Length: 572
Image 1: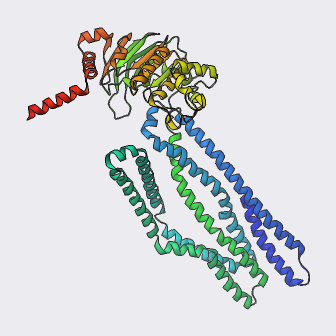
Image 2: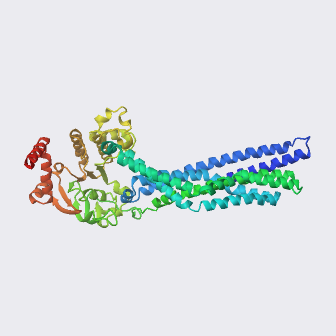
Image 3: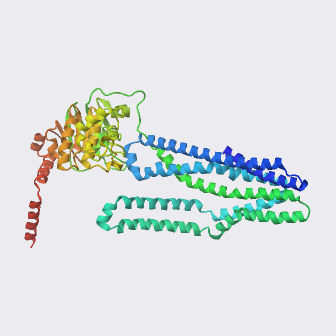
């Protein structure tokens, strides 16, 4: 801003020196004013260099701000409960981190040089005009005041219209993302009519807002922009100055200086208008960024925190709900898992199995009760220490758009290549990796799109093997695998589970028959626990799930077709 102010002052000084040069030519027409000409040239060059320096500094600052904001937002999101991230949604948080931060980048990059042009230039120019001739100064000021008066009346509803505009634009963006992401479903079911219809309605609403915003100010707004341009000010000063010179009450050189300076004052009005628009536009982005930065974080213990004494796990009267008005996802759940044992969590969909798995690494804090790892409440451990105890393999795999080796090293960046290859071999992934064009340096694409589901799952198992943490949480790691991949995954999981405390969320009950302990959940409550044979003999919820599982395993296409035909015959 200082450089931009210097640039503005040098620009005004250039105009003044031009007037003095003309005066010198009038006074001594036979002698060229070399010194004044050199001063004009120097000031003109200085104006350009100072403006260029201001432009460079403001953009460097904008890039620094962009990095600072994104780092701070990312750091904040890494400390908030996972429930906050899910409630906000990926789209909204992406908009804050990308679009809103970018809006602040544009504001800082473009607005800071504008401040000098919007405030320094008109103020200094007006003072110089008063010194040269107060009559012409007031005439120029009157033209600009008239333009601002008309414009302020035309823009009385600007704040409300800006809010409507941003809301309509966000709905269009959301509809576009939905339409593109759902393209396979769109082409399969509705050929785009329903989904594209929502986009079209959002676009029509956006057009309606734009039309209203253009029409409501009407002629006054457009006329004010004409008045605020340099030409009306120049015309008034030109005609009034000419009359004053004709009346011999104004020196012609002073009149020329006023003409040169008043255009600079009028030209500064446009940056002022742009600055006002930029401020109003960026306010919404600032509010959204501040909301994320103010999101509540999970409390952390003072000092070094406590360390677990072993790989045991215990839930004590745990109750948990995802939102304030939601029903309990877990209610008064208590169980204990001994070190080095395998515990399976089973139950109908929505029973709370995955919630149990996600409370262990403290993705959320419990509403009541305690979750203990190694005899220590997870709330009394630092997150780094807690995550050094627990490794995860979820059914929904996530790979970064990095190399295979980079994805395996996630969480263990210091691991050497031999360790990475060893983990991949144990995860039954090495053979397919070596068939890829660049082996371990092959990039997997966004979310691992270039790999199959089973291959992605084996990469995540290799990642868990490399971390070698004492507690392992498996959330139905073979749920979406085909038979061939499932065999490889089971072999990999068997290697991964050796010597670890395992918590396994299972839907395929055959995989957990030999578990040391089976915990049966229903409607957020722990209703049964024990070994497979005992639970089947008990005849409770687990026995019902087991019967349904056996029926599903014995189902075949031929039997289903036969049953359907028999049903039709009875109906006829």
